[in-house]
Amino acid sequence: MTIIGVRKEAQGAGRGRNLLEHIFGTIGSGELSLDTEKKENVTLYKKFGFVLTDVVKCGPINVYCMRKTIRPRQKN
Image (cartoon, rainbow, N blue to C red):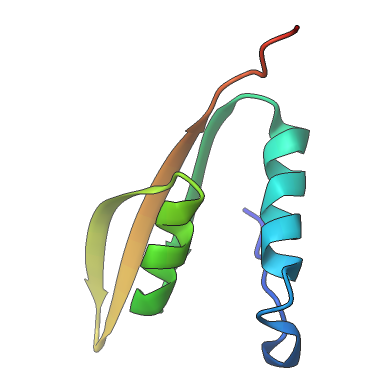
């Protein structure tokens, strides 16, 4: 398990996008799962190809579980 994030003061500057794209390139292929407690992040992660797979109630908090299949890049 790895936890990643962007500091609040740095959000909106493309750092999250760069971080996710780096992770996708590093993984190459496979399944990538993430959890977020912020409902507004679900829309953001969907833009990167993640699919909402479950919402788990953890006391007063909803945890949004998402998954993305990363396919190997095609060689030209």
